[in-house]
Length: 372
Figure 1 (cartoon, helix red, strand yellow):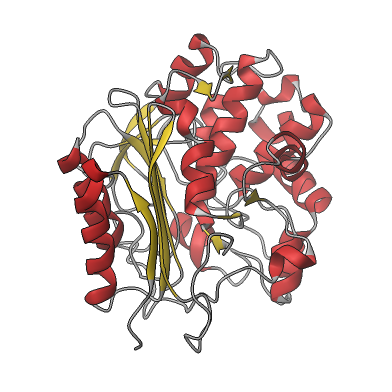
Figure 2 (tube, one colour; figure 1 turned 90 degrees about the horizontal axis):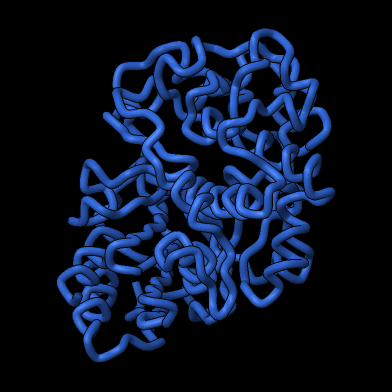
């Protein structure tokens, strides 16, 4: 492997974060990566390094995009909180209030908070379906509306890798008249953060080698198979270009680290972004309130879920018990810490099998906290 170029900046107080970032490359753990931190409204770390191509000829740049898979759920969580803040949605209202078809087969009382905290029983599609159907928003919304919960709602959490994104996207279309991808393009045009890529944006996406082995889900159950292991559990039999162009908010957002850290910063900064209050105090409280705690039925962890984010009860997002976060397939992660007014995002191209708590991102986050 070539010596990896590293560029960007870290405020002097965060010099050890740059040291940790360089160490990940020196240890041979990265191909290309970015890491960014916002503190009290200011970008204090914005680092990039390595290469964006398989041949290691093209340095990772400020406009290199990486797919963050489920770390994109943090983006959806903030958009839901924004909709709650503006009165379009209510965390405790039944989803069927906004989407009447959703009430079918025992889902009439499932709330937005239930879905975002993975208590709705929507872990995946149980019956066989064409795997390319994931790219058809209308068909998937109809499947979600018609299905029955796969476990009793509110009895436990059972992580939804894909379907929760279709719930969120359909709700935004119903109450705001626009999809999540359109909202990001129109209302957050200054941020390099996308759900559904145009051809010119696809050209900026980093090559991402798959992990050397599958993630460890623990003892397999039928719910875990439905969520992750069925031939139709995720989009398949489609071109990479068609997949990148689709809007699947739960798993195919493409971002830069700086854009992701900045986008979620209102969770850590009293609802504010720049001079604008994006989230009301009530919406912020609702977003970060613990909704359920216990052994997840799909992920092999004891988790505490809020409305789209995990509470950091396991150290998956560093040493702070006041942090919240989400991780993505392959190693990406995003965190917010309202007590310290920081948000951070780690994106990378060399994928690992960690479901959450990838050591590369943890090394960086631990360096951030050591700098505070």
